[in-house]
Image (cartoon, rainbow, N blue to C red):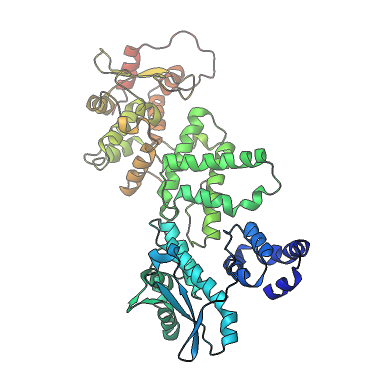
Length: 492
């Protein structure tokens, strides 16, 4: 193809026409990336300068100086060798000052024809070695795949290399260049597969997604692309805030459940539509699915059952009174939780406050010295979930004892979204979920159910829960002493 090009391209116009008709379809594709790079190097010998520069510009490679002097070819025995000094750029990965590259022929004319491509392959191998010398795990792995390809092999992990047929394994070993009597370690790692593929974290998966889903942006304006990206970015930010920036292969079913529980809480407190939530979780899922598929990771992603059904905002069941008493509050049952997470859970038992509201408590909103100890759900530097959330809740039983241990609140979780996951993981690991549908938030529903069973008035129940009253609201409601009496009757 290149010889034909050299003959065809006798002017700038002819070169441009050849470029449009052939290169655009045969060399721009990523599939031909490695071949195209070699072609650029070969062009320095067989094409004139104009074509070479245009190829470099179109493919994004640095232009290679064109030299017309003949390659230094010498015979060693009967076989011709290409003899070249090692460029300074590659000295960190090549100990030899001069390299002798066998051209595998005893014909001088054939050796001269083969020399430029042999040198191009040597340059490409050195470039891959430089990349493989990086401290960045992803760069090292990509370089290993490229270097293996330069040597004529497909990169595969060492465990698979070890299972190859004997002759295939020997081919790989023999392909590794030697320095004196020692293997070149970077080449050996690439050809023999000893460089582990780095795990892809959720944040990195998003970066890869933009490239893998590039076709989705074709024909879109800059504003349209921004609009398309925005909810996807938000979905990834939400997951990382709740679960953390985990490797996608390490995401567990419990992680997904914690993410779902976090959304369920937001549905109730912010009056969100489940459809909006489903779109967010769909965006998160499609990022992981595309990266898993296109990168051939072979992962089984635990994304099933993530979507919410319409009307699901009130479907989480309450813990039964028996379960709370004999399981959650059993001596030692919560000892494995960190102290702050354990205290938050205990505060929920007799207040029904939202986890986020409890985490936001400070010394100024925890009142332990008054005749009736209470917590005050106030803005206090943050926005309340709803306008009805502002309220005072008396403290009794295990909830009062928990806050006496933390009179200044819970700084570990005040600005973190990690509480729900920490407790969710613990409940699951220790068999403390009454059913798979139960979560930390089920304690809030249980508190409301206990009030209902002893006949607490709807107005008082809604005031304590921070819910909107569906009828006209008259007066200031019950005072702290009265609320304390009512809650004391159901205290645990």
